[in-house]
Image 1 (cartoon, rainbow, N blue to C red):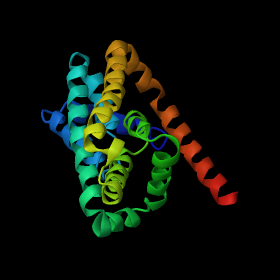
Image 2: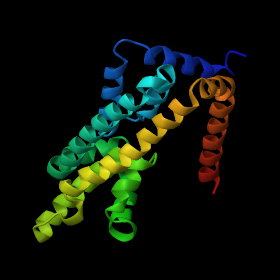
Image 3: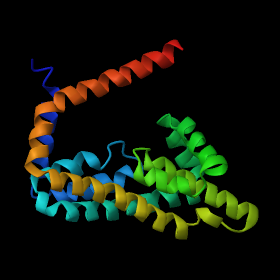
Length: 210
């Protein structure tokens, strides 16, 4: 029974952490690092903090947006200035080379600058978007003398719009749902968690077999 309640236990830990006096600083650190190298998305901190204190939901969303954009700018310039060899080696170490090449293809063939917004708004790892954008901007400058639509002056505003919509929407929904949403999450968190685990396992098995 305890194993089946694993996600309830994690949820309770997140709620306790969200009520910590330094919770806002934890949120800043997580949001910044996630846009550079950290695998845990800001939502893991943002959602429990909004549930714990709904009146501060929009303040937490603002903190998340600012810290996340700051981290993304850092990732952009890491890609722009020191991608090869250091950042490239780190990406290879964390097995993200294929993901980066996929994003590069999206930038050049399908979505262009829209990919920045898509990465900022969706669960696609934004660090890959930021670093790839920086790399491609540097390549464009070396080739043509201009970064074009991948310039930092496009990257930041588009990122603000995407990250702002994502985190403010999330905070707004949680603040609106309030106690009702919190009760629903407590009731179904284990079902949701294990369903996601099963879906991931199914996907992995499918990839291995086919």
